[in-house]
Structures are given as structure tokens and as C-alpha cells.
Amino acid sequence: MDFSEVMGQEHVKRSLEISAAGGHNIIMIGPPGSGKTMLAKRLATILPPLSFEESIETTKVFSVVGMLDGQALITKRPFRAPHHTISDAGLIGGGHVPRPGEVSMAHNGVLFLDELSEFKKHVLEVLRQPLEDMRVTISRASSTITYPSSFMLVAAMNPCPCGYLADVKHECRCTYQQIHRYRSKISGPLLDRIDIHVEVPAVPYKDMKGLVAGECSIDVRKRVCAARKIQAHRYRRAKIFCNAQMNSRHIKTHCSVDENSNSLLESAIDKLGLSARAYNRILKISRTIADLEKEIDIKSSHVAEAIQYRSLDRATHFL
Image (cartoon, rainbow, N blue to C red):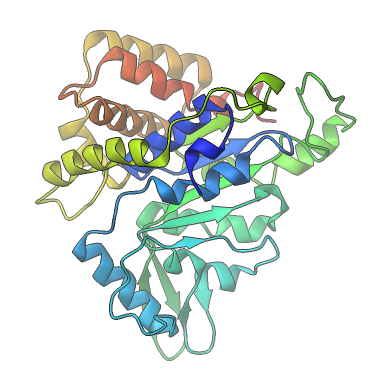
């Protein structure tokens, strides 16, 4: 699988590159057949290799579940894609003897949730704690066990039950109540924890012909690895691996912005009604965009691009 096989959708590829470079969570919204699943599956081809410390952590989790398959060390980032019928125990972990769930199996890798709105609401809500704390604690009468769960959440969903809301070539026949019910499964607090929101429109015919070859995964991966190398040096004493793992203290230290960027942020917060968590997400994404461009300081252009990736925060856009 390679990024060059995906025709068009250059802005989505850019958002996935930023996601991979900083370890950011991402949600893609678009009609059926626009390439959301195809793009998500190719994200693994641009992710940086596991560091030795990450390999050890990931191997421990797979060892507990008995899924090492004869390997002494896990060297590839996990890519987990559970079906939407999964239970909360299957996602988070549990059982009489607590075992890791999918969020821990995806530690240092990717958890891909296709057709996000088809998952049960209570199953999605249990994602909030591992997304915030990067670990899962399972309590039983006999013991309490904590498993790591530092993963990239990649989600894909249709804009409405029929999938064609705002599509220029297909008429959406869903009622307001159906759309509201469909989207209400993804709560505001969960959406807040997803860094990047990107719309994936239907692919135009001229792009489907494939006359212009897209950029291959190897070239994208080089830029991602260069950005991760910058982050590894920056956080060498902080015990974190990427920008997405920054806490408020790290953000204050490494994400200072100039006056123009401050004005942009103030305007975005006033117009979009962003939460404090969304504000921090924008700063983290801005830091990643700057790292991809090998810039020491965050510029207003980086902040402006980062704000574009919070489209679902607009009240008129997400019901």
C-alpha cells in the first residue's frame, strides 16, 4: 500500500502527514467512496519506526495477551481496526483476569475506528479517559491493573445516515432529527480530544483518471521522520515522544506565539467558541507544522493552518 495509489485528496494527505508527524488524533468526514478508509490504511506507511523504548513497551502489551507469535521484539507500529460491534470491555480491556483491550493493543501505534457513528455511544465515551491520560486502569475485587494506551486515534464517518449531506452530486434525504441522532453519538468532550478534523469530499473525475501521480509514501515518511527527530531531541528529558503528548507545562515552554498569531487565536476562539482543550490542540498542531517546515518558532501561517483543522467546532457545522 502506498499514498501514491490515492488519487486526489491532497489536503487530506497533508492532514495525515501532520497527524503522523506529531502523533495527533484525526477524524475524517465524507461521503461513501471518497477514500477515507483507503487513506487511513495507508497512514501506517508514513509513520516513523518505533524507538527501542517504544518497542519494549509495545512488546510487553502483546506479551500479556500472548500475541507475540514467536517474535522477541515488536518492531512495527501496531494498527488496530476493531469492528463497530465491539463492546466497551473489548475496547478498553477487562475480564475476570483483566486483559488489555484494543486501546492498549494500539499502544505506540494507530487505533482506526471506521464508521465511527455506528459504534455504541457508551463504547465511544470510554475512550475519553485513555485519550487524555494515555493509560487505562481496570479495577477488580482482587486487583487493579494499569495498561498503557498512548495511541493515535484515526476515525472515519459519513456526515449523515445516507452519507450525502452537502454533497453537490447527490441529494441527502435525511431529516434534521436523523442527522442529529446520527451525530449525537460523538459527544463534544470526545470531539474535543480529537486534534484534527478534516472533510473528505468526493473525488472529481479528473483526479480519478490518475494522470498526475501523487507523492509516494517514502517521501512523506522522510519528512515525518525528520519532524519526529526534532521532537525526540526537544523532549529527550521529558519522557514523551511527540507533540501530541505535551501537557500544559510543555505547551507553555515550547509553543509560544507572536502577536499576529495571538490575534488569530483570539478571533478563532471568539467566533468558533473553542474550549481551552481545543485551544491547546491548535497550539500542538501549530508546533508540528513548524517542525515539518524545520522552523524553530511558530509563525502565524502555522497557526492559521492549524485553526482550519478544527472545522467541527463550528456550531453550524456539527449539529
